Image (cartoon, rainbow, N blue to C red; front, side):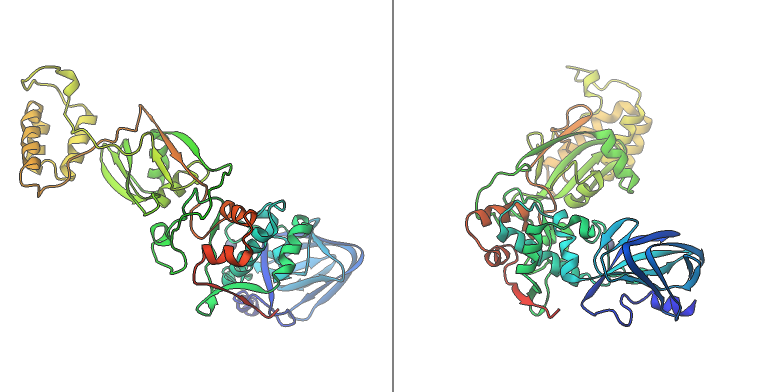
Length: 450
Ligand SMILES: [Zn+2]
């Protein structure tokens, strides 16, 4: 057990090439089938046990750290190899497999050379019908990404997972002749910055201007600056619109701990140099808060709000001041007595939190609703006076009833390479080197030995 626990910290075993990557295909399984028609399948435990089978073998977890392969008990970790392409649960992967303990079950890990790995990745990222130079740029990005993120799942006994968390990897089933050519023609090439592997972020479509990384994730990276696309192009994501219910947005936001009461307004409160939303302000009956536009997008749903390159309706609109109960006393210059609804109370509390009313004014208004008009006039006088007070409360006009419409451009976080942008450049005759130089300025293509 001690042995297994230690081994879980490493991602390659003796006898496995250093240039190989270990990819977690599945975690915590209690059974697996390996098959290689008419060929021998060899299992070897790191602690010494061995077993061989012809064509197929069933593996079952029988106790923590121990599997039964056919009728043979083996201690994990165990390698599973064949001279031909070996299938796990009928899915073919190149290289070999390793089973490592995970609780009472095991993780299924595919140990595969970086170049073969990329052949099983690229189709998930690009369209083989695109120009070869854009595919080569993508191959270099994917290779750099994999090596830079090696060991990301080290505590689970593998380098990368096979899901979009790392890079979607489907093995031989995802291979494509054209993409294999793009991998082969860039063999061993990675993107480096000042000697280290670059952070090769990419996205589907920048919408015309890539994003500055610091406005998306906070920290600045010299080669991940926002810049306009060199050429104009059309993509299926060039423009999009999404209409969402405020109540639904409110529900998902509060499930992530962002609570402003009943959500009544959303506005873009700052943009980057390209016009992309950086911060979004949420206004509700219990207050107001500002969050990163990228965080807002992630929470609300990155497939619904496809990018942070959006406006709402006609865009953020300057607000009208809040007039308590103004609709109930049209034309009346007098302060009438109206009971406060719970909504009115929440609004007054929110505005007090924003500094519009003083706490003692709030207390007074809650007890004597007829004094609301008096205090509102006082608040407005204060704001038009010295100008040293808080920003006046604002309600954002783009919200119509309970829905809000987002109009945007592009798809994805906008950082690094824009795939549709790269396609347009390749069509215009740019080679993969120039494309990568454009999206990652200051980096250079370098060769790894593998
Ligand atoms: Zn992962």
